[in-house]
Image (tube, rainbow, N blue to C red):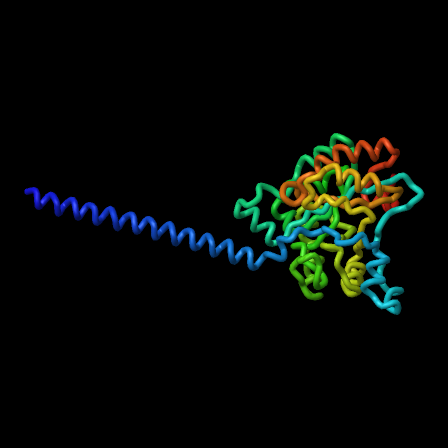
Length: 302
């Protein structure tokens, strides 16, 4: 009897051992697939995960054109708006609602909670401050309800920032480069998608990473869009020091300034909202009227 029980015990132990091995094998397979997913994701999207709009230098559009185009071509280049009138106490706060394929994937994988810092809009509302937001289509698709609300908000004007925030030229802040044909498709597709999602047709376009060539500028102009640059980069990207953002903006602002911020919050623009709570009241105390790009360029009624 004792020998028979021992065999049963051994059989039970054998079964339990196999179950443990099976469970371990399933876990290893799961981890392997997870690691493969992350590896493929990182490989495919590394460039597009690098945060856009971190200007390596404060080149003006004129300097950019001198740097990128022969003198003989410059007279035929469509205009780029860097600022408004230097004789009016108006300033335009602008925000880029960036979204690359990599950023969208990070959101879906739970690597980030959100790419929309709603406290920025709360500050604009509290201060009754107008602003212009440049939408990427991927951002609009991710936050469709919020995008429509923003587009219909009397404080907000919207612009086109491409479909998926690619590079329009090579060596553009690590962004994923698209050739001319695909780049043009990004602009046109974004224009139609933003209009369909929000009910508003953008009048302005901002290049991702401020990278462009003559063909890009001409195409944007042919679509009836104006290219909007800036004269103040707030340096809010990856910046954990709100005081440095405040100091940068307040030391450089002047009549007609266009200031660029980012709407993402979190990992990519962690202190934008905090900085704005000081910047906006300070600008108003100094007598600046905070307006949309249209109002800055006197393209809308007072």
